[in-house]
Length: 616
Ligand code: F6R
Image 1: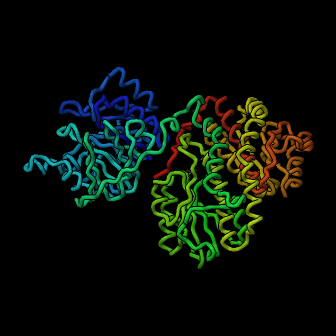
Image 2: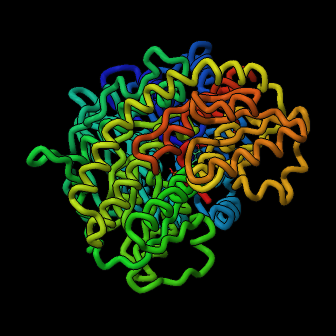
Image 3: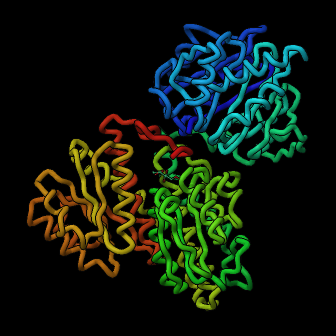
């Protein structure tokens, strides 16, 4: 995990790098630091804790320099202390490095360096890099000192996944950046060059971006960049215009990215639908990206994903089995990659990942490919590694999701997967043109239903949140399509409000978890009018008989629900019935947000988490 950034330009780099780190905070936020090149010296400022601590330090101990590198950390090796924060330096302080990823052989390298007299300051895996580079650089002294040669000499010694940036005190207008397995982008603007782990951090100084490939190295100066392979072969630098606006990566009038992203859901779904529905001869038709796979031949689908994306996959299983009649397996990526799965003939693997960088999902994609399965990906970040390694990509069009808890990406995933199920059904000849047109017509109403549900549930949700914020546990119950909603609702509460919460298939409740029910336990039951509704009413009775505190998520005119529950979160009846779970999750997102706020939690950067989990 972690985020890295770099700047070369006409302005002092400190404030520009601070803004870049702010935009990368979602990747890790337990400590931060930067190193600036100042008249033949490297000046380092670091701070444990939030970015505000680093900002404060730069006020009390200002740093000057028009070029620099910076880092926001999610600790893996060594506690989140100031000493372990990046940048790390060589012993004489003439080389500084920021790194994202893991150097797996750091232990052996550390011992080898210690044997040559190097004294380590930190417990990090990263610190071996500046020491190795400084030693390699010293070997180029006869040639007048060649930083590029030094970095190239060190790369083959490192195993693992990494992206790092290096500065040398001897080269005040140069940053060398390396990518092997972790994302790294080079930004070019009218007057500056930048580098970062993600596009938002390049804004507004860069208007063009280059995605560095694995095995490539960038030699960045004020005037441009030269790309080469690790072995030294030149590579043509191809920049693309940055399409994201700076507004998309700010909170606007909202108090948090999470609140903004929840509110954005109607627009996100509208955008996704607009990209997939075409009107021909007055009728709606589904248009899908070319996935490089003949879907008519698919006989089995394996979804691979982690957590929220996995919850979306659970819904996709229902969609595909019902619409296209194809059996579907849903795999947790961290299990799939190690459990020696079988490749079923006619099988298709589908990786779901908002970030497109999740290490377990990426490893599973590579495994599925080795097993001979065609792999397609559903991602929000089109430039991500998973997208680049898959044979076909379905974009989400959700826009940057910065709040660590996924909200708009989840509902967009569910809709995108439903559209994919329709595409499979169409390829199998199971979707008549009139059925297609009628389903798409229903789907067009979904964004407004999301809008209305968000507005309609707000009062009930904030009232219940005020009452239940002190509760130290919660249970979420749902059946069929609402079971994933129960899991996702519980996850939101856990991750941002730090409340122990579990989601269960409601039929399982009586087999054990019902023992948890007391007069203090909030039990949130998903009860829209679907095939499981009557059964859910029985669950409500069971909880009520044991004096549990009931919150029902259902329709405003449902008198049973009002009679049985202490609180009702009203949701619209989805016209596209299979997508009712998109409406059901909305009050639970807002509930988690309100409870977290009342408990004084940081909803955008919950403790111990990071947005993009690029380590195991
Ligand atoms: C939860 C959340 C995470 C992600 C998980 C997978 O709110 O955001 O649990 O769902 O880390 O991430 P992606 O989808 O980027 O692979």
